Each structure stands twice: as C-alpha cells, then as structure tokens.
Amino acid sequence: MGLLGFLFLVLSFSSEAKVVMAIHGGTGVPKKELSADMEKQYRSELEAAIRAGYARLKKSGGLDAVEIAIRYMEDSPIFNAGKGAVFTWDGRNELDASIMEGKTKKAGAVGAVTVIKNPISAARAVMEKSEHVFLVGRGAEVFATQVGLEVVDPSYFWTERRWKAIQERWAKAAKENKVRGTVGAVVLDSEGNLFAGTSTGGMTGKKFGRLGDSPVIGAGTYADNDGVAVSGTGWGEFFIRFNAAASINALVKYKGMSVTDATTQVILKQIPAAGGDGGAIVLDKKGNFAGLYHDDGLYRAWVTDDGKVEVALY
Ligand code: ASP
Image 1 (cartoon, rainbow, N blue to C red):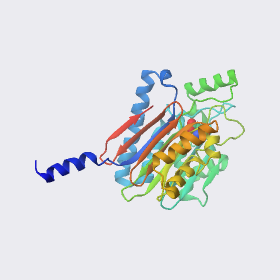
Image 2 (image 1 turned 45 degrees about the horizontal axis):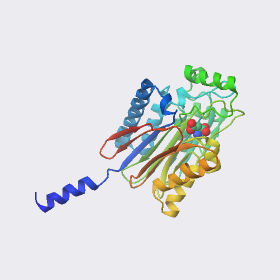
Image 3 (image 1 turned 60 degrees about the horizontal axis):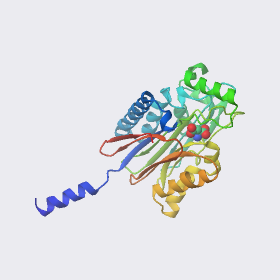
Image 4 (image 1 turned 90 degrees about the vertical axis):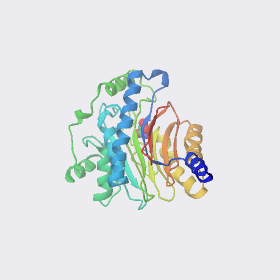
C-alpha cells in the first residue's frame, strides 16, 4: 500500500462519525427489574422512533425530525408521554411538551393538557402559529383544536401499567414515585442548525396542576446554534431549579466546555448534590453527543451521519 493509501486508512479509522440525531425515552427502572421482554420492546421502539425521525431529517429538516420521533414515542404505550402517560394524584393524565429551534431561539410549549393526542405537535403549533411561547390547560386545548390538531377523549391515555402505578402510589402514599419515561429528541441538520423537543406525562401522582421541567424552555428543553440542543428527563423540580438545559448550554457556549463535561457538571454533579436525579441527551453543532444520567438508566438511541443507529438503555 502506498503512503496515500495508508494515510487514507488512518484518517478513515480515526475520524469519528458525527451524531446528527439522538432521542431518549426517559430514565428507567433498575436493570434487574427490567424483564427481557420489556427490554426488547424499549430497544425496538427506540430504534423505530429514531429511524422515523432520521428519514424525515434527510428529507425535510430538523424540526420535522424532532416532531416525528417524539410523535412516534407519544403513540407508543411504553413511554411516559402521549398514550403511555402516567396518572396524576386524582387519576387523570395531564401532558406537557416543548420544542425549540436553535437558530432563531423560537420555542413553543404546552402544559397540563388532557385531550391533545400529540402534545409535541401542539408545542410546535404554539411556536409557529401563535404569538406566544407557552399555553396551558383548557386554553392550549382550544388553540390546538382551532389549528386542527387531533383531540381525543381523555380515556385514550388510560393504560393498565400506569393505572397500576398510581394505585400503588395511592396505597403507599410515598413521597416520590420513580415511574418515569419522558421522551425527547435533539437534532443537528446539514446546515449546522440544532433543534430540541421533549414530551411527558410528568411524574406519577403529581398534584394541584403541577408542571415539571419538560415544557419549560431552559429547564427540560433548550436549543442554541452557538451552544447545544438538550432534552432532559428526571425529577423535574430539580431541572427547573437548576435551569438544567440552559445551564448545560451556557457551560458549552460561554465556558467552552465539551458536551460531556457540561452535562457531567449539571446532571451528574449539581442536581444529585441537591438530592435530585435524572438524565439528558445533549448534541452540539459538530455532532458531539452526550447521553448521561444519574438514575436507573437512560433509554436512548442516536444516529450518525453515516446512518448507523445505536441503542442503549444503561
Ligand atoms: N421530567 C419529567 C417531569 O418532572 C418527568 C420525567 O422526565 O420522567 O415532569
């Protein structure tokens, strides 16, 4: 082999493929509690969701990719978002979602909605079709209906597994229930634009119109072309108090930290030190990706610009 051939080989092995899209399906359960069957389902649903988003990314762009991947997971009963949402303390499903575009810093969010089939699409509609950023409750539902989004009877969100979880929560009246599974996506398009979105049913047994971090721009979701795209999951109160997604972005943007160091700082150090937990997927415009958690795993998948998909739960 000539020198040029050798150099080509070295270069092609040393250049890391860049990540162009990543998703998460929330933090999970301890590894020993996850049955082989559930593990199989999570892996195949994550893979299908990211493939659906990635196919759209190549055709029509980053925002569509975020929405499509999240919609896929909202429609799947195994994630705590859309169809599989957890129950509130009074036995209802209240959903939250947000979406953001890193170039323009445009964002949209909905909170505590009960009849919108795909809250991520409602968040996108708030961003694109209203003059507001954040709509909650009945008003958000009226808006979603007006822009033609699909509404369902609240009973659509009932699933056996989540119903059991709230029964257990009622029986124990425990302080915190870790049944989670929020979904999220971060995307880098071919022009270097970043996008992020998050959708959740919140935390089992939440009370009094509680909103978590997922619909709060800067807490559960953030996208900035000069920094990173972030989608978080975990104990939302801590993500709000620590302004988690925006803090990770600021550490990258203003302190020049790598995505891994910045995510470590917030997710593995600051939040756990205060008694919280959770995880985040973070992507920068060079395709550097971190998916880190201080919790029982982080269901996640990512795809590189050569189309290779990886799935990891722990
Ligand atoms: N962060 C979500 C919330 O607090 C829950 C989760 O990620 O599982 O509402």
